Image 1 (spheres, helix red, strand yellow):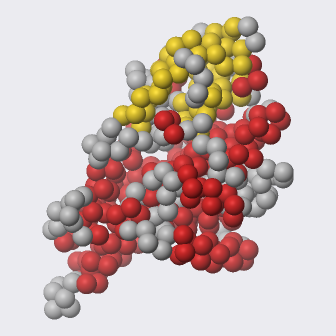
Image 2: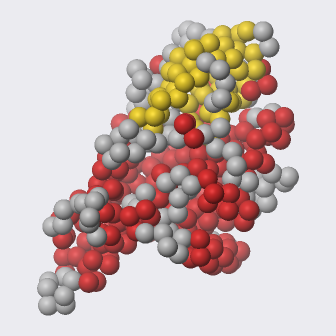
Image 3: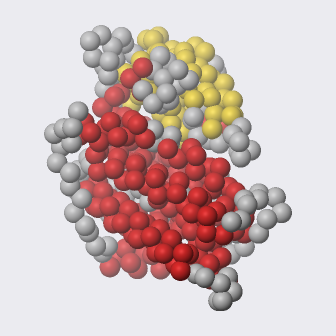
Length: 385
């Protein structure tokens, strides 16, 4: 059984000073960025913006030299928090900087690190996640994509799905079977860095109900990956994925994805004529802000543990689970307060933000693991099952 540890922490003065720099940068870079676009936030892809962040030294900033500036996880937290609160388009570099880079720092070879990490830190190299498969759902242990040894490398056949921005990424870190599981269904899996320009790889965007195409299916047909692109040890893929997911599940993106809609709720409540009753709006906004502050403190505590070299799997999973419930409640509360219909076309800032978030938030309980899977992880970690 794992102890549940979320000690509150305070940001260092250096992090506070950094926040001012980030805000000044964003005020200029996003001066004309409309609220409807800000509502898209972490799913908005802008390669040029990512390069600007790299030039500021704000990508890979916790990584050791020569790849990064060896800043603390809490300083990086401030940068990410400000980016999301401003609704900045961060999707291009997001996965590479958040989890692929840290995974390679922990498990990758020196050659892999030298090849890839400088490009990620510069905002010039983008990754997608190759975990989920069409017939596996959230049960990663049931994956069937397989890599078979060949001359100087591995030949991969199979299919991945929900690979966000695979059609615009340079690489995928793919979890595949390199051996049969036997009695341990988590055994026999390995991770590979896959160049998505490799012959035998087909990327097909999936259009969702909002009209976006960030999700993709990726098909491997005798795609060759050299031995030099094996990440970590052969057969250790499951343990590596668990470590990778800790980076994915606890950050401020787990409660700030809908922040622009919350901003628009406050603006709308402020603009209502004073003679109209506002107690209900004040109570609802107060409750949302209280939840937001609590989630932020929990997320900061996880960041402090990561900074200390701890792997807070259960704590990170709790933040993700609670964050989803919080974010999915915001569009419902927005509609109840003002009775306004969401409108992507022709609406005002509030209506457009509501329309996007209302549709997008449905998928929030899938990303990073479904609610059912997350609660199973929490229960096992706490010795409850």
